[in-house]
Amino acid sequence: MAYDWLKGIEDHYDIVVIGSGLGGLTGANVLAKCGHKVLLLEHHYQLGGLATWFTRKGGHIFDISLHGFPIGMIKSIRKYWSQDIADSIIQLKGVRFINPQFSIDTTFDREDFTRQLVEKFQVPAETVERFFTDLRAMNFYDNNTETTGQMFARYFPGRDDVQRLLMEPIAYANGSSLDDPAITFGIVFSNFMSKGVYTFQGGSDVLIKKMGAELKANGVEVRKHVVVEKILTEERDGRKHVTGVIANGRTIRCHVVLSNSNIKNTVLRLAGEDNFSPEFVAQTKAVRVNTSSCQVYLGIRKGETLPHIGDLVFTSAEPKFSSEKLVDLHTTSRTFSMYYPDTRPGSDRYTVVVSINAKYEDWNNLTPEHYATEKLRLIEESITALEKYIPDVRAKIEWKEAATPRTIERYTRHWAGTSFGTKFEGLKVSMDLPAQLPGLYHAGSVGIIMSGWLGTINYGVIVANQIDKALAARKRAAAAVA
Ligand SMILES: Cc1cc2nc3c(=O)[nH]c(=O)nc-3n(C[C@H](O)[C@H](O)[C@H](O)COP(=O)(O)OP(=O)(O)OC[C@H]3O[C@@H](n4cnc5c(N)ncnc54)[C@H](O)[C@@H]3O)c2cc1C
Image (cartoon, rainbow, N blue to C red; front, side, top):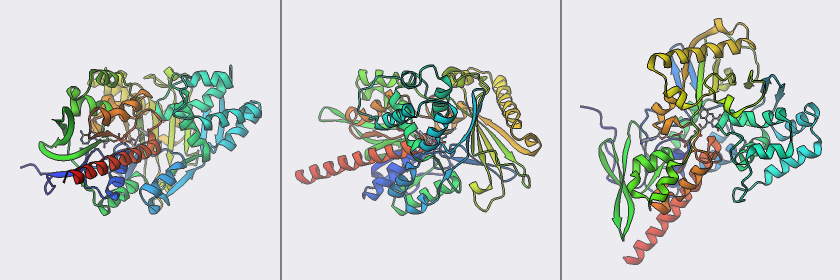
């Protein structure tokens, strides 16, 4: 008989959290600390969602999304997790750009970018200062329809090299384009510019294990290998309300469901269209997702070393920056994340993770044979590209493997392999969810702004606070009736 991964759980919880990405984990932790009874269900065999890792024969360990986040993570982790976890966050100092338009080394913060823009790119200091100040003052609630491309044209007309410097790293990371609202660029870029790029020393495995221990200490019931198949609703006072979930074939009752599954999955598949107004369903269907993350993992044989060529190396052979070229199946744009032994203190190992963007549809349309050969091509081209900076690297590589948006779809169950949440319009759908279906909340990468490690953690906190308030009001109402 199959093992019962739900063995010993109770029939009712205050909150069931679907998924253990950083949004789900953080939401669960905050809610448990508020005193609520929380059950967290994850379909995968390990926690973390996209903040994950895998190991391979030969002692190789690969991080998927531990490339860099803004300094704001230190405060968020300290406040909503622990000082101990926050203490392992350190700065990555070696950020490099190598492309036909320029080659620079930077600490990726406002001071250094100002220096580079003024000295190397010859942009007037006053323009740079105004750009940074205006960006910092951007407000989510401003009704600004300007796109990122239009904003660049306003500050730096005719300067596609400057546009590339500002946009390329953000586009690599979160799939945003020049046509997205300027606010999405402004918030994400300003977060990084504040003090540079940071990482978690010890690796994603250590981070997620520490988070798992913290959840346990705070009383969250955590179960892996559990797929939530359906969100249950009932009609009360002429309105539908959430009453529970079906997971691994079993019904679990709850007052609130916090879904960390992709927003389209949550509305259209888990809850189902008939629980929402036709307008809301149409809005959800119209949400565009970012689905272009591909990676090549290169494991260096034990005993071999690599020279320090930087921590994050943004490379491209494209003559100019283009949002379309960046996500072309045959793109030449690659970011090398170099993991030296100090990534995991005490280790003597090196790995390289190459991040490339190429559209889900292009990968999904391939036959199985063609899919396999395209993955081999991705690996081969990545090694050849790395040889430019480390000529003897090929002989040192012991393990090579590639992942595409289809891989992400398989491991996270996300809509079309969503890797960086949704475009801007997804945020409204996510935020409107509880008003549409009382008891249902969503926390996870949406709107570009609430994506990435920092955005997702902060969004998990915002939504947890809303749930805490709603449950307190519910308790007060119940007490009044009694
Ligand atoms: C290749 C790559 C590189 C990245 N690099 C960076 C980076 O350098 N810096 C950065 O800040 N961000 C990076 N990101 C983005 C960042 O990892 C994500 O934005 C963030 O981790 C997403 O968290 P989330 O809470 O939205 O949930 P996810 O991580 O998407 O997790 C959702 C979880 O829900 C589970 N789930 C879904 N449906 C069900 C169900 N029905 N039942 C049970 N469980 C379910 C999934 O298995 C998954 O564990 C990267 C992403 C990718 C893909």
